Length: 178
Image 1 (cartoon, helix red, strand yellow):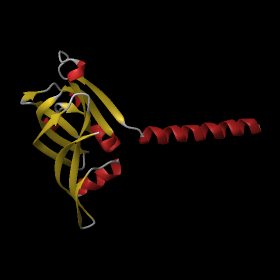
Image 2 (cartoon, one colour):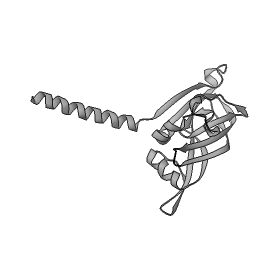
Image 3 (cartoon, helix red, strand yellow):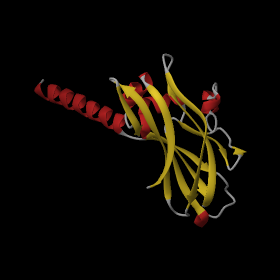
Image 4 (cartoon, helix red, strand yellow):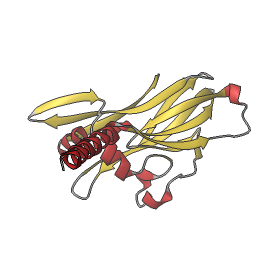
């Protein structure tokens, strides 16, 4: 009987630990290679933070990877669907390999639920990418919380997205080398 209680207790602890680890992990979606004809030595990696969708790459409309969530134009293109972006916050990301060089991305930002959302359309960002490097496209939000304005903060947790939705002011995009 004592062995059963110990086994049951260990099982509960293991399940709880597994749940905590799964919640803390990053939800990554491999979006493939933009142009498979480009040699591997001329590619770089672009990580796209949750909530950001790249609609155009150098003026060319890109293929939407996950079309079940494209009820809104802000969800078209490369990115993570709204549900995963809401659930995992900035820890969700889409990863795509792109050619090195100077590129202009036309992006949209959307995060929200049935009650409220944050959305910004047609944000253009230009960056020079170097082959072999990894870059992160992230959103910096400005929002009101408790009467105070928080500016250009990268939100990392789902709770922060919920807080920012209540007083959303603006979003700006930034590409950083990792």
